[in-house]
Length: 264
Image (cartoon, rainbow, N blue to C red):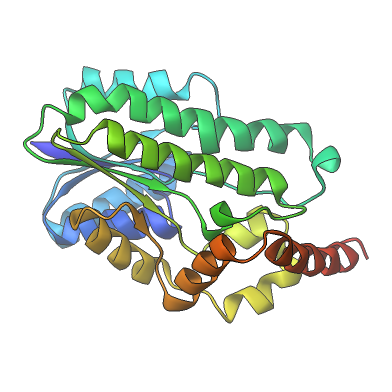
């Protein structure tokens, strides 16, 4: 029996991916911080889709989280054929003003935990006839974003790591893809302290279910990068070809407005 391991699976894209995989009759392992949510989601998935669904309560932003997760999988003798590194967060503000907990947490979760889980699970994934890694980045990976500088930088790391790892695993049974969504109707805006742009963001947002559908289609097709939504795809491609200062200036002006609103 092989499971799909999904981090950040208590809601949003992570939960939508878990449900979409379960609908394909794939067993799932859900990892996040909220016991109540995970327990309820696993019960729901078992009943609705008749698949195995287990969970681990774990704060993935702590330094020892990767080793705890790996030990849990090994101790329970779970086979893994899909690793989805979805857990991550952003926080708005000029770099010097970021609370230390948010600063350290973003680096730990978005970069160290993700890279550590890739490193740890690749040997297990190689044991499967066919296996997949899906790392969740963002359209913010394609440009610098003033006042979301650290978040955008961590997502650029995820994209670069995924592309490099994909080449390292060419010729093996493991395929690596990177999901780069734009705005999604999850709790990201509130968690990032960006309520001032919530109304504008929601005009362009996709649902977690739509993102999950595009993600799995791209993952199983072996795509290197998956950018759901034509507008998101176009803006990401334009950011790669126009002078870098143009999208950076637009982002600066947008979040400068945010600063005025949120500080009032």
